[in-house]
Image (tube, rainbow, N blue to C red; front, side, top):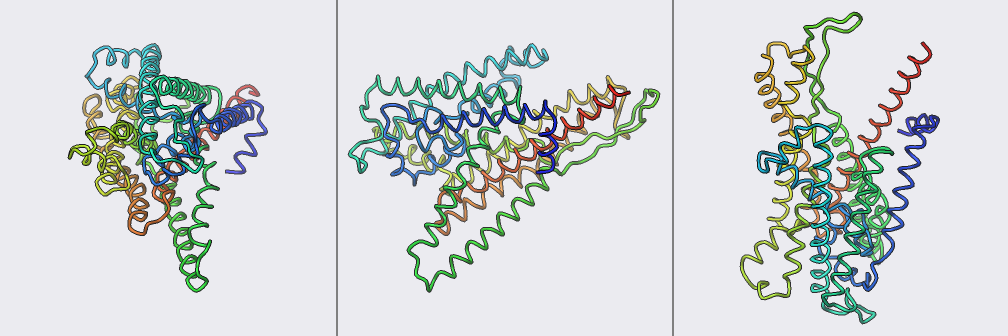
Length: 440
């Protein structure tokens, strides 16, 4: 990895992309420290036990802990993307039509996603602010609640600021994707997780080494050793699974001089990458926003409210099960979005290629669909286990909240790092080919 970065920095174009990405991430981290006016961010320290707050910290790139102008992060954009992609599945005819129009249709769908992000961002920001303020109705040490002057105009003002922050962060993510390195949305979340690592280490240190009886200190060392081993195992297994692929042999009917007569089509075991984990986190966050908003209402004592509160809280058994099920479901969904068997079969037919012992057209589509289902089964179960095991450990042994989402954070960090490294390798390889052609 370090050798790859060193070689990449020697190339002017790639170096410019890397520096541009670093600059955008710096702007994001700078904005993550600017607290929204009229809000006492210290009140969130009293809400650190809320799993929902920890979940939002992961999705927002740790911007929520300061209730900054970027506190919503890309969460509304991710939710809007899920909705728009679902509507393309023969639900809204216009969206289905746009999905088949190539680049023009993609631009229209992106515009619809932005508009929906605007609406969801405004609703979600007001819901989160009102919900947290209702939950923190007790006073902080400074004698102030989360929102200093809680009224309709204040909530609307905060909602506008947070929504503007979301749209700006989304724009920055698009700029990274277009002009920088890696997927912009994933890179922003990646940067937030990396920035929060020192705080997580400090939290673990304070819990297991500060004010601990020297006679029981050995237990802390054993726990840290087990934690380090678990991290190494998860990192190794995740890296292996992210790179694992099934190579499907491809034969060509049209022979071109100098071209090979056979090749292979690589299908990843986890074709969806880390997107299902981010999707599931956002999907959990949105209903919990509404539930927090209703915390002090007359519905709080109703049975359905208590059931939904348990269901959309990842630190409970029903919530952790739902979180895992969502990861599994989104893995299958996004795998078929990334690898569309129908378009794949159509493209192979147009290129004059085929899979040995598989009929072109519909037969190829069914074969790829079945293979993708089997591969996604392995990938989804793995993602679900990595996300679920730390949550169970946190619930059973009363570990710090940061460990509960440690699996999710690791999946995102490793997945984004691998994808970014592959993109750098691709750019380096492309430069070598272009240089070879020009010299020739």
